[in-house]
Image (cartoon, rainbow, N blue to C red; front, side, top):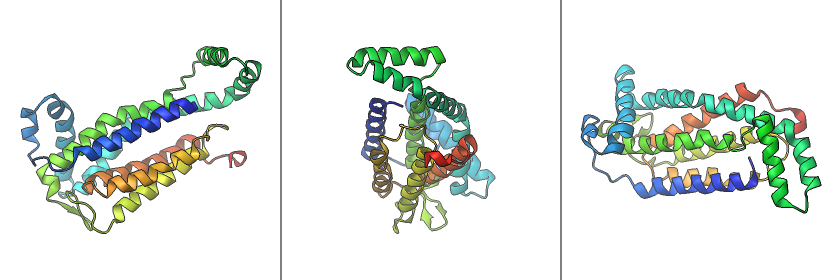
Length: 250
Protein backbone atom coordinates (compact mmCIF):
# COMPACT_ATOMS: atom_id res chain seq x y z
CA UNK A 1 0.00 0.00 0.00
CA UNK A 2 1.40 3.39 -0.94
CA UNK A 3 2.16 6.08 1.61
CA UNK A 4 -0.74 8.20 0.31
CA UNK A 5 -3.16 5.31 0.59
CA UNK A 6 -2.04 4.67 4.16
CA UNK A 7 -2.80 8.29 5.01
CA UNK A 8 -6.26 7.88 3.48
CA UNK A 9 -6.78 4.68 5.46
CA UNK A 10 -5.64 6.32 8.70
CA UNK A 11 -8.01 9.26 8.13
CA UNK A 12 -10.85 6.84 7.37
CA UNK A 13 -10.30 4.83 10.52
CA UNK A 14 -9.96 7.97 12.63
CA UNK A 15 -13.25 9.23 11.16
CA UNK A 16 -14.89 5.90 11.97
CA UNK A 17 -13.74 6.07 15.59
CA UNK A 18 -14.92 9.66 15.95
CA UNK A 19 -18.30 8.76 14.46
CA UNK A 20 -18.68 5.81 16.81
CA UNK A 21 -17.86 8.03 19.77
CA UNK A 22 -20.32 10.64 18.54
CA UNK A 23 -23.06 8.06 18.27
CA UNK A 24 -22.99 7.69 22.01
CA UNK A 25 -24.80 4.98 23.96
CA UNK A 26 -27.81 6.94 25.02
CA UNK A 27 -30.17 5.56 22.38
CA UNK A 28 -33.44 4.08 23.59
CA UNK A 29 -33.16 0.37 24.37
CA UNK A 30 -35.44 -1.81 22.31
CA UNK A 31 -36.07 -5.42 21.35
CA UNK A 32 -34.64 -6.98 18.21
CA UNK A 33 -38.12 -7.39 16.71
CA UNK A 34 -38.79 -3.67 17.05
CA UNK A 35 -35.86 -2.97 14.72
CA UNK A 36 -37.94 -4.34 11.84
CA UNK A 37 -40.23 -1.32 12.19
CA UNK A 38 -37.32 1.10 11.96
CA UNK A 39 -35.61 2.78 9.01
CA UNK A 40 -33.60 1.10 6.25
CA UNK A 41 -30.43 1.00 8.37
CA UNK A 42 -32.17 -0.55 11.37
CA UNK A 43 -34.11 -3.06 9.29
CA UNK A 44 -31.42 -4.34 6.94
CA UNK A 45 -28.18 -3.81 8.86
CA UNK A 46 -28.76 -3.64 12.60
CA UNK A 47 -31.58 -6.19 12.78
CA UNK A 48 -29.63 -9.16 11.25
CA UNK A 49 -26.74 -8.62 13.66
CA UNK A 50 -28.99 -8.12 16.68
CA UNK A 51 -31.01 -11.21 15.71
CA UNK A 52 -27.80 -13.25 15.32
CA UNK A 53 -26.57 -12.16 18.74
CA UNK A 54 -29.89 -13.19 20.32
CA UNK A 55 -29.89 -16.51 18.46
CA UNK A 56 -26.36 -17.51 19.44
CA UNK A 57 -26.97 -16.43 23.03
CA UNK A 58 -30.05 -18.68 23.18
CA UNK A 59 -27.98 -21.60 21.87
CA UNK A 60 -25.10 -21.07 24.32
CA UNK A 61 -26.51 -20.75 27.84
CA UNK A 62 -27.74 -17.17 27.36
CA UNK A 63 -24.13 -15.95 27.26
CA UNK A 64 -23.84 -12.90 25.02
CA UNK A 65 -20.06 -12.87 25.49
CA UNK A 66 -19.93 -16.22 23.68
CA UNK A 67 -22.50 -14.97 21.17
CA UNK A 68 -20.25 -12.03 20.28
CA UNK A 69 -17.32 -14.45 19.83
CA UNK A 70 -19.31 -16.63 17.41
CA UNK A 71 -20.51 -13.59 15.46
CA UNK A 72 -16.93 -12.29 15.28
CA UNK A 73 -15.71 -15.56 13.80
CA UNK A 74 -18.54 -15.58 11.24
CA UNK A 75 -17.86 -11.97 10.20
CA UNK A 76 -14.14 -12.58 9.86
CA UNK A 77 -14.71 -15.77 7.84
CA UNK A 78 -16.99 -13.83 5.49
CA UNK A 79 -14.24 -11.30 4.76
CA UNK A 80 -11.54 -13.98 4.63
CA UNK A 81 -11.58 -14.12 0.78
CA UNK A 82 -10.71 -10.41 0.76
CA UNK A 83 -7.91 -11.02 3.24
CA UNK A 84 -6.55 -13.81 1.05
CA UNK A 85 -6.69 -11.45 -1.93
CA UNK A 86 -4.85 -8.86 0.17
CA UNK A 87 -2.21 -11.46 1.03
CA UNK A 88 -1.69 -12.40 -2.62
CA UNK A 89 -1.50 -8.74 -3.60
CA UNK A 90 1.09 -8.16 -0.87
CA UNK A 91 3.21 -11.06 -2.13
CA UNK A 92 2.92 -9.77 -5.70
CA UNK A 93 3.95 -6.29 -4.55
CA UNK A 94 6.95 -7.81 -2.83
CA UNK A 95 7.98 -9.58 -6.04
CA UNK A 96 7.66 -6.31 -7.99
CA UNK A 97 9.84 -4.27 -5.64
CA UNK A 98 12.97 -4.48 -7.88
CA UNK A 99 10.96 -3.28 -10.91
CA UNK A 100 9.36 -0.49 -8.89
CA UNK A 101 12.80 0.64 -7.74
CA UNK A 102 14.01 0.73 -11.34
CA UNK A 103 11.04 2.89 -12.34
CA UNK A 104 11.70 5.28 -9.46
CA UNK A 105 15.37 5.56 -10.38
CA UNK A 106 14.63 6.03 -14.07
CA UNK A 107 11.97 8.71 -13.57
CA UNK A 108 13.17 10.24 -10.32
CA UNK A 109 12.79 13.74 -11.80
CA UNK A 110 9.31 13.09 -13.22
CA UNK A 111 6.86 11.98 -10.46
CA UNK A 112 3.91 11.91 -12.88
CA UNK A 113 5.70 9.57 -15.30
CA UNK A 114 6.89 7.50 -12.35
CA UNK A 115 3.30 7.03 -11.18
CA UNK A 116 2.07 6.20 -14.68
CA UNK A 117 4.74 3.55 -15.22
CA UNK A 118 4.15 2.08 -11.78
CA UNK A 119 0.42 1.77 -12.47
CA UNK A 120 1.17 0.12 -15.82
CA UNK A 121 3.37 -2.37 -13.99
CA UNK A 122 0.57 -3.11 -11.52
CA UNK A 123 -1.95 -3.59 -14.33
CA UNK A 124 0.40 -5.86 -16.24
CA UNK A 125 0.77 -8.17 -13.25
CA UNK A 126 -2.81 -7.82 -11.96
CA UNK A 127 -1.80 -6.13 -8.72
CA UNK A 128 -4.26 -3.84 -6.93
CA UNK A 129 -2.47 -1.46 -4.53
CA UNK A 130 -5.79 -0.76 -2.79
CA UNK A 131 -6.43 -4.41 -1.92
CA UNK A 132 -5.25 -3.83 1.64
CA UNK A 133 -8.09 -1.35 2.24
CA UNK A 134 -10.96 -3.60 1.14
CA UNK A 135 -11.29 -5.78 4.29
CA UNK A 136 -11.47 -2.71 6.50
CA UNK A 137 -13.92 -0.90 4.20
CA UNK A 138 -16.19 -3.95 4.13
CA UNK A 139 -16.12 -4.25 7.92
CA UNK A 140 -16.92 -0.59 8.57
CA UNK A 141 -20.72 -0.82 8.08
CA UNK A 142 -20.68 -4.11 10.00
CA UNK A 143 -18.89 -2.39 12.89
CA UNK A 144 -21.40 0.49 12.87
CA UNK A 145 -24.30 -1.97 12.76
CA UNK A 146 -22.77 -4.02 15.57
CA UNK A 147 -22.33 -0.88 17.65
CA UNK A 148 -25.99 0.02 17.21
CA UNK A 149 -27.13 -3.56 17.84
CA UNK A 150 -25.19 -3.58 21.11
CA UNK A 151 -26.37 -0.11 22.09
CA UNK A 152 -30.06 -0.70 21.32
CA UNK A 153 -30.52 -4.36 22.26
CA UNK A 154 -32.11 -4.39 25.72
CA UNK A 155 -31.11 -8.04 26.21
CA UNK A 156 -27.38 -7.36 25.81
CA UNK A 157 -27.58 -4.35 28.09
CA UNK A 158 -28.82 -6.50 30.99
CA UNK A 159 -26.36 -9.39 30.67
CA UNK A 160 -22.95 -9.93 32.20
CA UNK A 161 -19.92 -11.88 30.98
CA UNK A 162 -17.08 -12.67 33.38
CA UNK A 163 -16.56 -9.40 35.31
CA UNK A 164 -18.24 -7.29 32.62
CA UNK A 165 -21.67 -5.76 32.37
CA UNK A 166 -21.95 -5.85 28.58
CA UNK A 167 -24.14 -2.76 28.38
CA UNK A 168 -21.83 -0.70 30.59
CA UNK A 169 -18.23 0.53 30.48
CA UNK A 170 -15.58 -1.62 32.10
CA UNK A 171 -15.08 0.06 35.52
CA UNK A 172 -11.62 -1.48 35.90
CA UNK A 173 -10.39 -0.55 32.36
CA UNK A 174 -9.17 -4.12 31.91
CA UNK A 175 -11.05 -4.62 28.64
CA UNK A 176 -9.88 -1.32 27.07
CA UNK A 177 -6.34 -2.30 27.99
CA UNK A 178 -6.78 -5.76 26.44
CA UNK A 179 -8.23 -4.14 23.31
CA UNK A 180 -5.20 -1.84 23.06
CA UNK A 181 -2.68 -4.64 23.70
CA UNK A 182 -4.25 -7.02 21.18
CA UNK A 183 -4.40 -4.17 18.63
CA UNK A 184 -0.67 -3.55 19.21
CA UNK A 185 0.11 -7.26 18.80
CA UNK A 186 -2.00 -7.41 15.64
CA UNK A 187 -0.13 -4.44 14.16
CA UNK A 188 3.28 -5.95 14.99
CA UNK A 189 2.36 -9.34 13.53
CA UNK A 190 1.03 -7.80 10.32
CA UNK A 191 4.01 -5.44 9.93
CA UNK A 192 6.43 -8.32 10.41
CA UNK A 193 4.93 -9.93 7.31
CA UNK A 194 4.78 -6.85 5.11
CA UNK A 195 7.06 -6.67 2.08
CA UNK A 196 10.30 -4.67 2.38
CA UNK A 197 9.74 -0.94 2.24
CA UNK A 198 6.11 -1.18 3.37
CA UNK A 199 6.75 -0.08 6.96
CA UNK A 200 7.22 3.66 6.40
CA UNK A 201 4.08 4.31 8.43
CA UNK A 202 5.06 2.06 11.34
CA UNK A 203 5.24 4.82 13.96
CA UNK A 204 1.97 6.29 12.74
CA UNK A 205 0.20 2.93 12.81
CA UNK A 206 1.18 2.56 16.46
CA UNK A 207 -1.26 5.37 17.24
CA UNK A 208 -4.14 2.93 16.77
CA UNK A 209 -3.69 1.06 20.08
CA UNK A 210 -3.88 4.40 21.91
CA UNK A 211 -6.99 5.41 19.96
CA UNK A 212 -8.60 2.05 20.63
CA UNK A 213 -7.87 2.34 24.36
CA UNK A 214 -9.38 5.83 24.59
CA UNK A 215 -12.47 4.85 22.59
CA UNK A 216 -12.97 1.57 24.47
CA UNK A 217 -13.13 3.44 27.78
CA UNK A 218 -16.33 5.17 26.67
CA UNK A 219 -18.07 2.25 24.92
CA UNK A 220 -20.28 -0.46 26.41
CA UNK A 221 -18.09 -3.46 27.13
CA UNK A 222 -19.65 -5.59 24.39
CA UNK A 223 -17.98 -3.56 21.62
CA UNK A 224 -14.38 -3.65 22.95
CA UNK A 225 -14.96 -7.36 23.55
CA UNK A 226 -15.65 -7.70 19.82
CA UNK A 227 -12.39 -5.83 19.09
CA UNK A 228 -10.40 -8.18 21.32
CA UNK A 229 -11.92 -11.24 19.62
CA UNK A 230 -11.34 -9.72 16.18
CA UNK A 231 -7.71 -8.83 16.94
CA UNK A 232 -6.95 -12.35 18.18
CA UNK A 233 -8.58 -13.81 15.08
CA UNK A 234 -6.41 -11.56 12.90
CA UNK A 235 -3.23 -12.69 14.67
CA UNK A 236 -4.10 -16.38 14.13
CA UNK A 237 -5.22 -15.70 10.55
CA UNK A 238 -1.98 -13.85 9.76
CA UNK A 239 0.08 -16.74 11.11
CA UNK A 240 -1.69 -19.26 8.87
CA UNK A 241 -1.66 -16.99 5.80
CA UNK A 242 1.92 -15.78 6.05
CA UNK A 243 3.58 -18.25 8.38
CA UNK A 244 6.43 -17.07 10.54
CA UNK A 245 8.21 -13.95 9.27
CA UNK A 246 11.46 -14.55 7.45
CA UNK A 247 14.59 -13.68 9.38
CA UNK A 248 15.64 -11.14 6.78
CA UNK A 249 12.43 -9.16 7.47
CA UNK A 250 13.30 -8.76 11.12
